[in-house]
Length: 382
Image 1 (cartoon, rainbow, N blue to C red):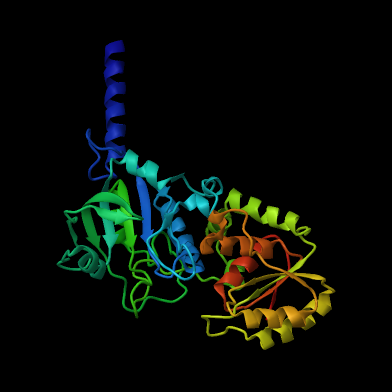
Image 2 (image 1 turned 90 degrees about the horizontal axis):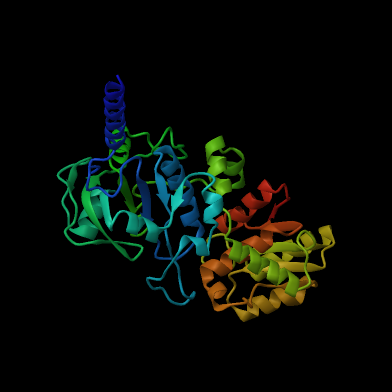
């Protein structure tokens, strides 16, 4: 009887392992991964780090959670300066807190993932245009599975071998404002099946926003307004709350406040968008609105976050507002001077202010408003 029971337990264990491995096409004795596996989103914006990435990131976070895979933390292709652009990838942890994100879904760093899968990804999901343009591959039709490229694929400058490519194209008329509807943006069962079947999945959205006239090709950005935040579903709200600034950036913001004799909640802040935006405010428009706002709240010190580059514009604002103005223009280390990280420090300092005013159609402002709304702090618009 003991022998029979032992055999039954062994058979049951073998069956469970077999069922666990059914989710991955390459899950066998030689496979590096067996089970739910990993989900790696790849994206690229030529303009460097910006809030569009955060909108896209909210969406893919929810995909990773829906597919019950470990989420591979992407790197960010960040500008070294505002005057130059080059392939310069920085790890996720330079910008956001991976420990906070891990409370929403399991995560792994890109380098750890590369080691664990021995540099091989089972399937890359991409549009037919991306397959042809980036890799010289021809998809015979939409939703076809073909062999992957012979050469390694660069994902945030890290080379991976890709075994298969799944070609998927979004509908020509994708409904605006549509939620995930289950797992993927349009609840496409075929695509969901592919992502569930393979152990390691690369979502290659490299061409999102990357070519003139091209819409996001795989995943639409989340709406990014205070209204969308307040109307978010419970899962979306959890995802957005899990994207928190890195401890290093928070410490840098606290250092700045201490150096300038400021206390969180005892100063006011403004975001002045001056350039590269259809709704940018001239110095005269900005001063006209903010002067009255400062007087209304009896403010003596203003923290100013701005992309204004003209010294004449800046001098005009300083001369006419009639209060002490401080800006984050002296980072404590060169690493914080990188525009993407400096912009996040600006956001943190604006989020900590007693009152805040910004440009309603700016995603930069709306990131700040979202953090302030979550902390029950008031915000106003120019």
